[in-house]
Image (cartoon, rainbow, N blue to C red; front, top):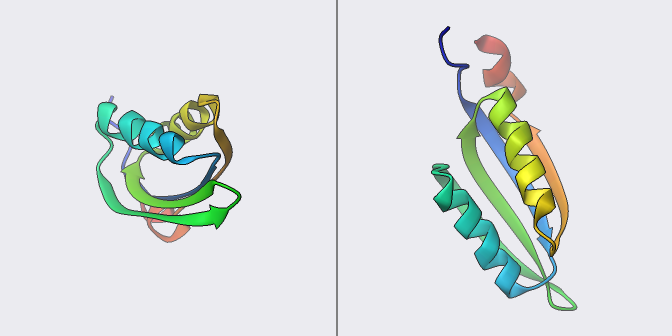
Length: 89
């Protein structure tokens, strides 16, 4: 069985604090996700908004979302798979 095709995935994450930003990066790099873009900005009240672009297949994107939501100080995760490229495969 051939592997599922990879497609661009955009993640928008709200983290409770700066150490959580580090935990998110550790999770992503430890699982060997290739990051094509990473942006972090302070959202006030100690919270941080992260925007991350990576590549994953459909199952991998859902698994990544679940892994991020298990981190205690990750407050929200919004996942957007590229429908233009995902539908072409």
